[in-house]
Image (cartoon, rainbow, N blue to C red; front, side, top):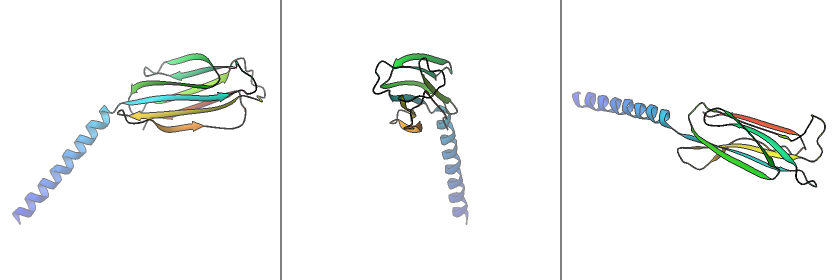
Length: 137
């Protein structure tokens, strides 16, 4: 009977230690965020997009770039970080947009693992604005 009690106590200690290790590693996990925009305004060229995204200090970065493929990576950030990406056609006044098509993506990498797509908007309808938000869980 004493041997069974010792095995039980050892088993419970192992479970407790494993739980502590998992808790400590989740606090030290590092994430990287990749923002992507793939756009076309065919048949027009030279169309510019105004893009904003938040960086690892949770500051908003604003840039202007041509249509096509654009991406940037920020990090490291911790669990709970809210990744935000927004883009709109330069000079767009809110009217009907007939040509600009945009796919926007937010991907994350945990502890240097490959990036995984977490949130996307790949509407095929032409539009002047697109935005996404994703909280790292």
